[in-house]
Image (cartoon, rainbow, N blue to C red; front, side, top):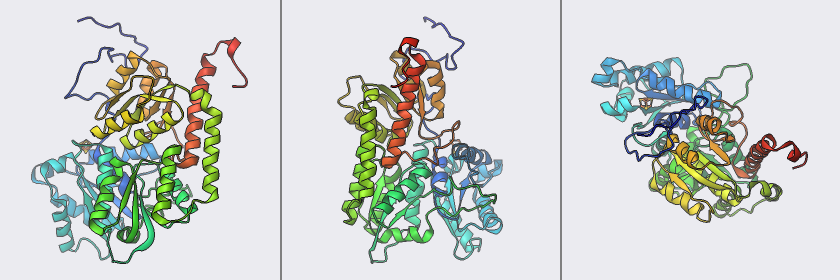
Length: 467
Ligand code: SF4
């Protein structure tokens, strides 16, 4: 076998150029595990303590992943499995944990998710919770909900979707009287994005219940006081009322469809599945869906924001034209980002998500159908393959999470950090990328990355003051 020369200045120097078909090996995964998503979703309920039913190691990892991304202390409890519970099951641990949690931390509710270990054992969480209730371990008015998150299938997005669906399964109730409100299931977006979606809903004059809602939970202010359960999050009463709403807007097929469908089945609340409102077209569709569902008209304030975004696209378009982009991330984010890029004449050429789903590949190919370049897309793919594609033919820009910084450095390609996790920058949980305002921020980030590179690489004779 011919050996490639190894460049020791490269961090990923062992990634070979030659691509070999792999079916049973993932290298540098483009996803993380289910419970992280379940924990993030649970933090979007007011007064909720997420609980990891498994070993301490899993819980420590999930908490630290969320803490590092959101730069906030993430509270969660664990069943702390020992060797004994791994063999005989975790019932005793969970019963003890429920008792301890309500006695010591006094949350309004506990949201239990499983882990690989408790799933493999086959612990029956509803049975254990019923036993806890029968033994008086759940105080009056308090709740324990659960979702199953076996991490050997799906990804963190699957875990998020499962916990959001559990919110419907446990809480949504139909009283038979419709309320003049809509449900918004925002998908896995930043707390800042959830705030922006609520701001747009407010501008439209629409009453909405957003679930989950991590705004003011994971991007709250520093005020010198430790608050275990911040004021943000959807309340249990609001979740119960979702069964009486006139409709549901669910954003992102992977993160939100399961909950929207469950709500329709359980309480006959009709739903519309939309892409995440990233970019002009997807935001237009979101605004239009709200208008149609509620019968209100779009206010001038929103028209002005849209016009501003359009103006900026027009001003910047010449720099975007025909640029090649490589993206790694979660399917809902990548679909919306790809459509946005195509709308400004940039071309996603390599698109990889670690989350499985053939529909993803089909959708990306549809979005990029007019591309002048060959487009490669993979669901349940990894960053190793993505890197090999880049080695075959480079791109002008990378968009993805912090793990892309190794490829960015080795291949000398600018990187815009977007998605989960972002471990080495701050701001993503405070500045939205959804809606027209969020779109303007994304445009500014893309333009800055492109022009910074041009400034760095231009000859002194071409180094321009005005670009
Ligand atoms: S993949 Fe499974 S074992 Fe590993 S941290 Fe996640 S839940 Fe725990």
